[in-house]
Image (tube, rainbow, N blue to C red):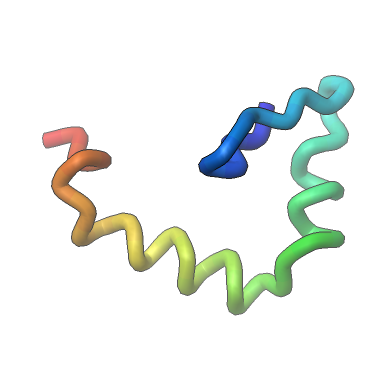
Length: 45
């Protein structure tokens, strides 16, 4: 499953990583993940 924010996309097992790679560059993905660190709603500790 891939959370799109406005919905959830389900894809066959093992295909999500490739789909994500096709949609976002490595740099864009890294920047997005880094931006989540400051979101208190997503904090795990």
